[in-house]
Amino acid sequence: MSHDYAIELKAMPSLLSLYRKILFGRKPGWDKQPLPKIYVQAPDVVLSQDKIRQYAEVCGFEFDGVTLPPTYLYVWAFRLHATIFTHKAVTFPLLGMIHLKNSISVFRPVKVDETVTVQCELSASRHTDSGLEFDLVSKVFVADELVWQALSTYLYRIDTPGRRARPPKASDMLWENVQQWRLTDDLGRRYAKASGDYNLIHLHPLLSKRFGFERVLAHGMWSKARALSQLMPFIGDKPFQVDVEFKLPVFMPSEVTFGFESIENGKRFEMRDVKGRRPHLLGNVTYL
Image (tube, rainbow, N blue to C red):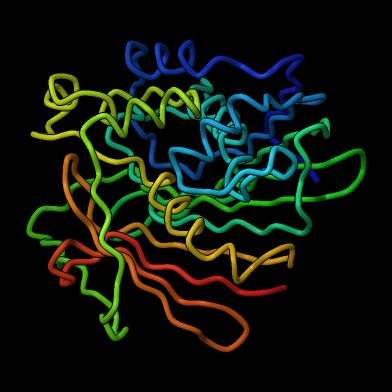
């Protein structure tokens, strides 16, 4: 497969150093051209049981000390995402970029003591009514075995005069006997400590206000992980794919509701506001 740029890392980069580039680096702006294909690989990644345990606790997974929570490898994949975001060939600023969708395929459970290779590619981009959408495909290998894969779709928003975005609507799922979760104001800091993702809008209201938010935002991938943790008793060790669309942001502190139902070959789930009217996350689990 050909790439416009290929980067072989000797070690996983620090997200703190990458966020410094994102926050303080200057980009000229999108040049109206399709994005180049950028490939990054980090070999011989060793996992930390302590960090995995912290991650499992903050996201609601039961961790046996052996098997990774299925969403945990995104923590490592995102470091390669940030490497691509800060590449010189990506000419637009990253602040305010929106994570629209995420799909994760788990081909088999990954063990804590396995050494992995993480790959990521900026594979496609397209101009839409909302701005520039682009896809990042991440893959994790144990030796030559593909064990985990993810597709993330991001949006670099471009304001169009006269265009008004319609608020998203909840699905037709029957909203009865749902769970109610309390999100405390320190959730973003606990997730950051476990994942290494210290995005300022998720940490403290004084920091999030600098970027136009009155309150702290919950991390979208925390929402996905928290939802998936409730479905693991049904999934067990089966290979599966979990797809989500991120809708309205979740502010903290707050309360949200979560529900799910059975569908053919899987589950459908949703996170809504406390009244059950406004959607924060829509998703499906499909067994492979």
